[in-house]
Length: 534
Image 1 (tube, rainbow, N blue to C red):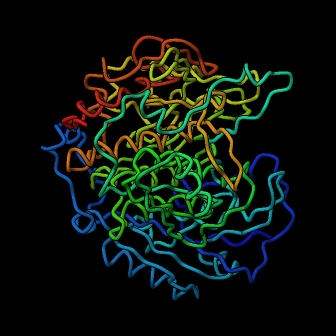
Image 2: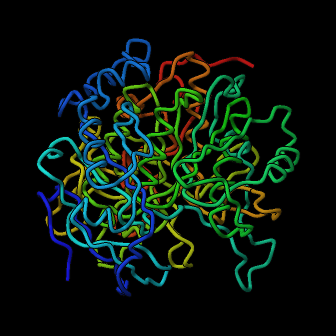
Image 3: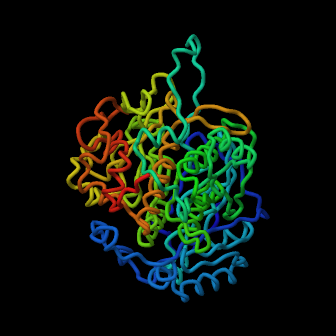
């Protein structure tokens, strides 16, 4: 018998079992569950930022401090009080509350959660493992209607996957025929990244939903690169997440180390902080809000290399995470997100084209992938990354089914969706960089040297570039998309050859590589920085 429903359904909270999942019974009634409550802003539905603000030069923008943001857009005390009262009524513990993050975390048994939110939590078996799940909507009592905008964590299915691809030797291929690989420093040189700056006084946040890093690996890697200055790397635990290396370089450790090694090599003066959270929608959301609102480390740029097709997310999750990215923009924090590694389908099996979220949020810099060939310090060829025929991935990209076309893309000639109906929406990606594992990055993971690519490499690459520009400007450039789209000619290496399945490269913006790969010094100038002479 299903649990009695209470209150009214929370819009956008609907869940269905994962494709291929099998129900195996009710969840353990005594299992302790942590639930993240996302509250409305004290400003109501008023936009967090005015889009016109980001068309202004960097020096003319209004950037809110984290305290100012909390005062204007945080959760109101009454909203938090209502949730606390609700928790007491249902024998739930208030584990954490943050007005700035608009977040309250509640903890309690499965039985208590079923009663509080009108759900029936069950256990499911899936080819990728077991998870606790629910179907239908979360229910809220009248006193929380309009106060609570999202409830996350009842369902703990894996929400995202890392977007990295390790290069593996192909049978019958001679060593002499293997494409080149590069250190991050070599790629930065090929892309003409700013010189004379190293990211000092900047903090790059990395969102990680599994795996971990080992200090000995990092120390050995910095020595291999002969860095005269090495970045400070630390970990922040979000919820039940933590820095837990698995010892498997093909697992999530590969993602974590790629992010650190790419960003840290290019911006060795920066502070690198990895925020570890569980791979659930609650963990992902909390990792982003924790990083963006971190008043201790104060990240100026966030790199995200995890995601999944828009169709795999609830609407409440996409709305809450997009608003968290809007908050970042208001506080001058740039968010760089990998666009995915499975071409125009984004790995979905329904025969349709999909884009990856959170890359499809119009408030982030979505990063697609190329194949980069160079001779010395000169790029000789750069095309769309597409090795789907070899089962080695392709850059994500396409048209969002959820988010409308943002104003900054109005003149970019974004095409209609390849799906029936030809929807015109947010185009993904915005920019690109080397991602093909056949021309990937030299890495050291769990003691093993190897070459890794994927759009996961492009997000920290761009994050490092932003950190260098921030140091040069002396002010965070924040949300960069409107400025990059204003006058893109000459600021990018245009990618005009290749496709990712349903979409092809060509002159101007395209749904494979966006505006193109960076000409770093020109991007720096477009964002208002004066190049530093060596």
